[in-house]
Image (cartoon, rainbow, N blue to C red):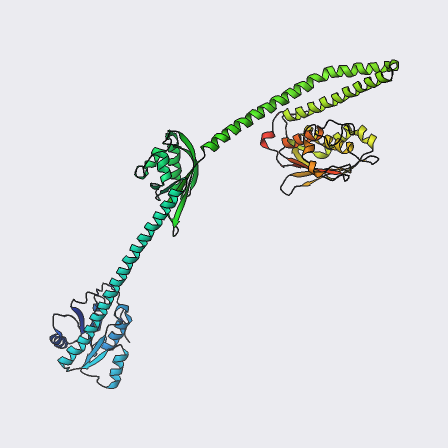
Length: 542
C-alpha cells in the first residue's frame, strides 16, 4: 500500500443545503472524465475533476463533497489506495465513494473495493440513468445531513441565546436582591469595579452624604469624603487594585445634615468569580463616638498616671522629711528610758506605748519610702546571678534567721536580666514574710527554687510551711496596707508584698500565690527573658 503525506490547511466549506453540491470525479483518462461530466452536468452540482489519486487527495482538503466517483485502475496510486487514504482523513471519512471501472469485475476485486471504503460499484460502460440515480441518492442524503446540521446549529444558537437571556435575568434578579439587602442594612455599603471605580452605593450613603447614586458613581464618591482624607482613601484603593488585596482604613465622611465630618471605618474586600476578581465590596461603619470616647479615656488615663506620679512624689517627700523629726523622737525617748524608775505603773505604760508607736511609725515610714522609691525609681537591667543576690539578702537577715532558727532549701537559681537592687528587695520581703507568718512552735522551713516557664522566661518559687491563707484572698494580699490578721497578732505594716508586686510589675512579669489555711504558701514570680522596654532605663536605683 502506498502512502501520501499531504499537509494542507483545512479550508473546507460545508455550504448551505440549497447551494449546489460538490461532486469529485477521479479518472486518469480524459475521455473517462468527459463521460462522467456529460452524464452529471446540471445546475445542482459543482463537478470537480482530478486525473490522479494524488490530485484527488489534494481536492479533498479544499471543500466538502457529497459523493466521489473514483476510477479503480490508475497509475502510481490506484483507486483502492486513494480510497483508503481518503477514509483516513477525518473530515472526509464519511464521504461516500462510488468505484467506476471497466475491468476487475470479479467478486474478489469488488470485495476489495468495499473493503477500501466504497459505498457502491459501477462498471463501464455504465448506464447514465443508473449513474444519475445513484448519485442523486447520495446528494439527497448529503443535503439532508446538511439540513440536520444547520438545524442543530440553529437550535444550539437558540439555546445559547436563551441561556444568556436567562442568565442575564438571574443576574438582574440577584443584583436587585443584593441592592434591597444593602439598602436594608444600617451601614454604608458600596460596590466598585475591578479598577476601583464605584458603580453602586446604597441608600444609607445617599441619605448620609446627600449625594445621589449617579453623583457618587465613578470617582464622584470623593465628594462625600472629608477633603483631608481623600488622598488616603485614593492611595488605599490604588494599592488594593495593584495587589488584589482588601484594606481597612479610618476616614471621615461629611454628614449632609450638619456638614460634620465623622470618623468611619472603611473595610474593602475583593469579590471573585471563578477565581478572577470581579468587584470590590466596601462597608463604612460610624466609629466617631467610639474614637471620641477613646480619646477621653486616653486623656483620663494620662491624668491618672500624672496624679499617681504626683502622689508617689508626695509620698516620697513626706516619708523622707518625716524621718528626721521621728529620729529625734526616738533618740530622746531612748534617753528617757534611764529615768523610767521614777515613773509609776500607768506613766510607764504610757511611755512604753509612745515608744512602741514611734518605732512602728519608723517602720511604716521606711516601708513607704522603699515603696515610693521602687514606684518612682528607674533602673538598669543587667545580667545578674540570683544566687549572689540571695546570699546578700541572707547576710542582711542573719540575725532574724538565727533568732527564728529558719531553715532553707535552695535549688539552683539561674542568671536573669533584672535590676539587682530590686531583686534583693523582692527576696528580702518574701523571706521576711515567710518567717513572720510561721506557725507557733514550728521552725520556719523555706524552699526557694526556679525553673523555665512553659511560655518562656523564669518562674521563681518561694514556699513556706507557715499558717497560709484562704485562696480567695490572693489578690488582696498584694495591695498596700491590706492585712488578713489583727495588727497585734503579727508585726508589719502590710506593705511588703505590695513592694514585691511593684518590683514584678517593673520587670514586666507577674506574681501569684497558692495557699491553704495551715498548709503554708507558695509565691510564684514569673520574670520574662527580656524585661518590658518601657521599664528599662539608664538610671539605677540603690
